[in-house]
Image 1 (cartoon, helix red, strand yellow):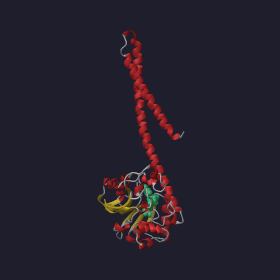
Image 2 (spheres, rainbow, N blue to C red; image 1 turned 45 degrees about the vertical axis):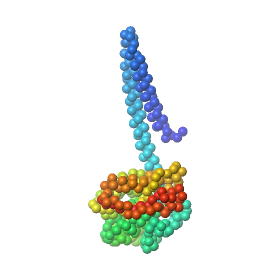
Image 3 (cartoon, rainbow, N blue to C red; image 1 turned 135 degrees about the vertical axis):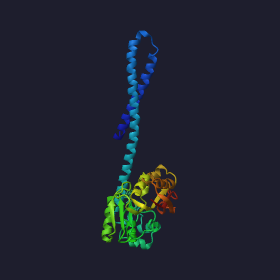
Image 4 (cartoon, helix red, strand yellow; image 1 turned 60 degrees about the horizontal axis):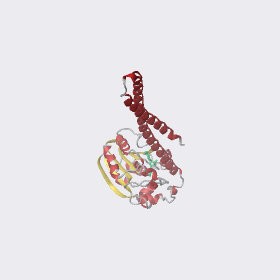
Length: 326
Ligand SMILES: C[S@@+](CC[C@H](N)C(=O)[O-])C[C@H]1O[C@@H](n2cnc3c(N)ncnc32)[C@H](O)[C@@H]1O
């Protein structure tokens, strides 16, 4: 038997024992209550023992329920950690692949065609350092209105595609910080910055939920197809807001889902991991609002071209670009 069941079995044994003790003691006590004076000393002794057993049984029951809650919480946290680790491995493998044309598990991924399909111009695609591919789902740069001198963070920067485009817009007086949880992606993006002599962009390893950034330090947070991976989107948006200057803004391209999916789709190699934590549009926008953002607007919305190729997902995965400010 899988060792992970052991705590559950122990908790169940404690709970059943406690419940049994409580019920049996209670029933016996009620029966003894009607007996006559002759057996009273014995009945009193027994009664006190039964009372104690009832209390101990009750305590064991409480322990059981507390344990069940703890196991559920720990189980969920472990499952999330596991999902994140396997996601990192997936993106590390993409970063380490030399031939970027084979990025998709289907082997049919063409990075240039993909970038065009999600809204980048030829000029944008050609302006990033050689070999930097886009794994996003929209074009946040097109609507971010980036100005010279601004400080930008690209959340989940991957190979750095949007970070490099943003660096061009903010110019030498501005700065772009790419943050990504996958060290291999950060290493690859850093190498591309070095080769492309891009001096106003740097990349850091970090998670959106715990950004390696000061409070109130960023003018614009852009992101492309990343927050959808976060199980706790509200926590992610609160953390993003913390780093923005007053009146700072977010421009986030992301995927949202329509409805729920059957088990066989949730087990899909490419889509399953994030479908398990993906949100519907309304829920996603509510998280943005609850985090304290104002002026929330969906500035573009269309079916994800990548998902459209999969008949089980067609029309059910939507690419949106959301703008809001602190
Ligand atoms: C779909 S790719 C998009 C990469 C990039 N934004 C682009 O458009 O090419 C998702 C990236 O987000 C990163 N990522 C996913 N969840 C993250 C999190 N919670 N914190 C930081 N990075 C994350 C992954 O490592 C991966 O590089």
